[in-house]
Image (cartoon, rainbow, N blue to C red):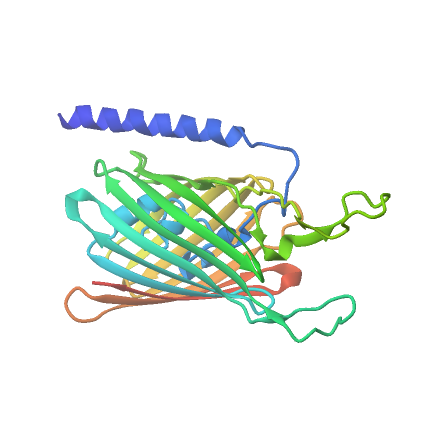
Length: 346
């Protein structure tokens, strides 16, 4: 019976792999299409640990940030976990990510996540008043998801993460729904882990609101007609930043005091060229972690590059554990981004 189950799961994994590869080929292009998708904040990786590993996390995924990288990873989390991540982005933009997971035992694991932006209000400027007309406007990026993952066998897990996305700028807003799908498979080759994910597969986004309301003269060559007919400017629909990732994670060595994990991810987005992410994590005594990586290798004109980070984990009362992680990534002419993460497992 066990052998039969393993064969079924192996067949399912091969089917998912073939489907994913075929799916990725459907948006293969020699043009990068950079800047042609909506909600680009969905491409900002979550978790200081993943950032400091250069984003090579789709096969490593085993903490609440897995809801972003590979939802199948939350199946590896026992008990209940809470995860808070803060990102210092460019132009004084900041993002906060909150996630929680609850293990249901043999029934799987459920997870919730929320991403929100923190952007100061800006002055409304016009051609007549370039310094501002006294009004201000705000900008918001929001994403909320409810995920689920289950271990079909000891070696194979699958996860789903449906989400709602919302963006607003001044009097215009847009929304969309999407889903992330991921799998993790512990291979027979020294227990190396193979992970795959498809993220942000969903509807298009189209801005709508009162800012598109204008008055229009249908025929300026005709006199005596109404030159101020109420109209609305048409806005385009834009796809979400769809991404297909395949990754491998391998424990070079692991004992009671030391553990070294190396990981590599290949990314195939719909708004850029393909690239490779590399990362590594050394953990001493299950307490101190030192991480490093390089993001977007072989990506033409990429400003992303080296990443570094540290983490500490401490057991408290009973089975309660708390972890603090810091991640730094070089961003070329855009200087750098930094992440701070606090996680609690109980």
